[in-house]
Length: 198
Image (cartoon, rainbow, N blue to C red):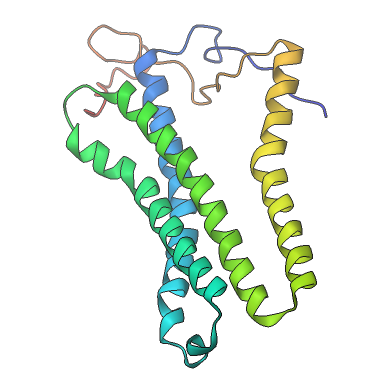
């Protein structure tokens, strides 16, 4: 797999300022969390309605236990993926952007693990109700393998390739250099730019 060359810094070769890198990382995390939250909300709503269906009275003890575990796992995923928003509110304007990005990254990773487990738990529950034991094992094994391949194996292969080629894992800043003036003015347009507070 061919990878484009990367450098640790801006397009002009200068290092990316730490404050700007943290702002960019935070914005990227928010976009990724929004995507994951949509999946959590749909799955959570589906699970919450199951006990009120007519067929619920005929589920087995295993299916009832699996449902409860899956519901709790999805609730944990929801808490983890919404957690960065609450964290940001609590440390707003306290200059804790580095801690915020680190904590949000940890919560997002843990939330994705819980979301993956919840999705596969829901698949196991539905397939177990509809199909026989052999079909349940085969379908759920394939589903788990597919999630692991996409969510863990593929990123790990990319990281290994980057490490082997000696390329830095830092992201590039695609929008040009940070304003260089001491008063926050860019050398080209003279306009003052102010970084929003944490």
